Length: 257
Image (tube, rainbow, N blue to C red; front, side, top):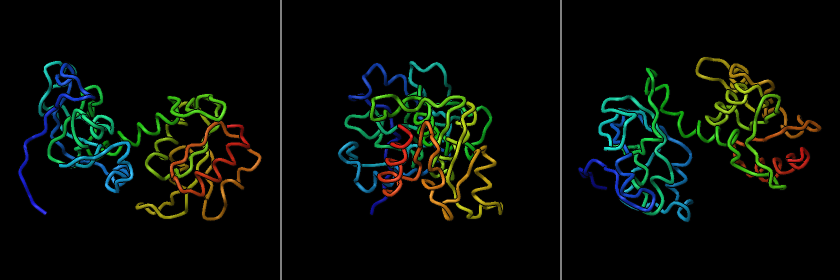
């Protein structure tokens, strides 16, 4: 292992970022970075076929920091702005990406300006874990990120719809519960009675977030507990083979999804 001093990253021309877009990027001074499951998946090499990570490799996607430099075409940000961003898998980990690979776990990181948001007085600690998990759940619930076997779009959660969220205590699950309730959906989730740092249980936490129904997965199988009940969408934030491949597929078929 060696410790080297390397140049501060800069936006670069590539397949994902033509020369004219280099001026639409910002350089961020990183204050905090969050760790996500995608990070260890990239470490393992399991996504190499999609995102062939090259070296030198700086991991991480979620950044909370301050704008250190702006491209000539950037008008919405100025040096010193406090911001948060998911710098993006496609933007940093594909062939000829404009920055990266990744880059959050460093002193500085590059991001496209249109992916960056101002923190509006909220702290880095409050927001650093939001971008990637929040975007994942938003896309799953609202932007038609998937289709059922008939070709109909999923991700159409709205008032009156029923959503089942597996793994409500995951970051994506906790955000999804709040997003679903914000639009008036009926939200059911799964959680355990394990204790939170404040002494309450994860089941208590799910209810505090607004879940209408919480299934204790240590006492009941969610597929049995919900037998005969129909849901408009299932959002799996756990990803175990038993749930994802077997139970979800069978239950979705029963619901006509």
